[in-house]
Image 1: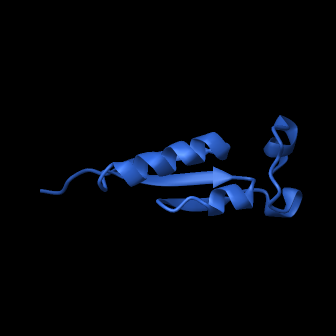
Image 2 (image 1 turned 90 degrees about the horizontal axis):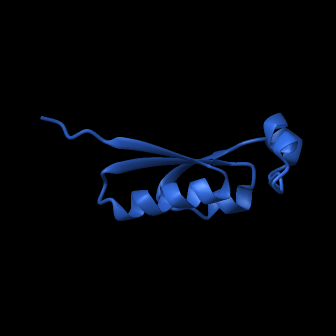
Length: 73
């Protein structure tokens, strides 16, 4: 019998940190994915898969809370 794995997705800085923390402290029960426009922030997460969003529009610098810039990314 296989044990189900919960997939946790975190978006943005806070969501990514939350997903990373949950994956690190779950004992392998969570598989986490973090997506962010800020490449430095998402690169610092070690316990989850990292997705960098908006490379061509924001060049990895993040949206700075600008919803329209994040939507374009």
